[in-house]
Amino acid sequence: MIFEVAGHRFVLALNQDLISRGWFKPFEPFQTGDKTVESLFSLSIDTGLPPSLPQGSPLFPDDSAKEFPLMETYHTENGDIYKMAVTHDDKQIFYLQTNHDYTQSTFYLKLPKNADDLYYHKALFEWNIAARMLYSINTAPYNTISIHASAVEMEGKAYLFLGLSGAGKSTHSELWLQHCKDTQLINDDNPVIRLNSDNQPVVYGSPWSGKTPCYKNINYPLGGMAQIIKGPQNLSRPFRTIDAYRMVWKSSATHHWIPRISDGLYFTCEKIITQVPMIQLQCTISEEAVKVCQKALTKQEFTDENH
Image (cartoon, rainbow, N blue to C red; front, side):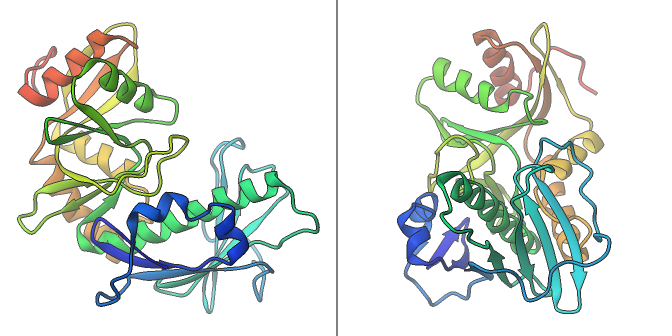
């Protein structure tokens, strides 16, 4: 099936069993039957093992905390193989095999006998990670960033909340929905930012929304971005240019070490941070936090000294 997110098309192929289990449900709002535009990449699925398993040490070891998903990268003569698991200690391993330019990939899940719902849940989790990763890699050269953030829309503009896992991005979005009239959630984990023909940043919904099922095929001009930090009071300050750049760069969910990707990100990041308010928000879980953030992002008035 063909899907389109932020104007970029790609092909996902699943067997009937996985379709019946709802694997395509988050993607349904983005499905298109138009085949006139070339797709950027394709992802198929195989219920066996890759032709060759990773050997030796990974090209990029995964040194994240053990409770986070595992992803190790191995380079082969035919492309890259990713070893994937829900956590570092999980014994259920999945593999993603790509060609050299990431345009054709296969996700391998070796079905055990009598696979239970937990197995399929893990497989779906990793397959979604693979699909989002391939999307971010293939769209980065086209002024596009798949970004780890929660996004809301208010008065025709999109506002993004960034931060580390557990920082309170989703919680702050919920506060906006509770306390701001006519506000909606665009995406709660990985919205997409793409520059339009005038190099203005536009925020798009995507099929990747974390734990919140928010899969909306909508888009709005970017109004501003805030890095969320938990604190005892509500204070905002504008980012210096270099700090704003670092925030967007670190939140972009892609392979920064590939030259064609990093080159695209440089340009897109620069256009974003020079056109919209970028702030750091120390905040509590309160209506006041929304007011401080909203005032800073929409009026450019800050509780700290501009610098």
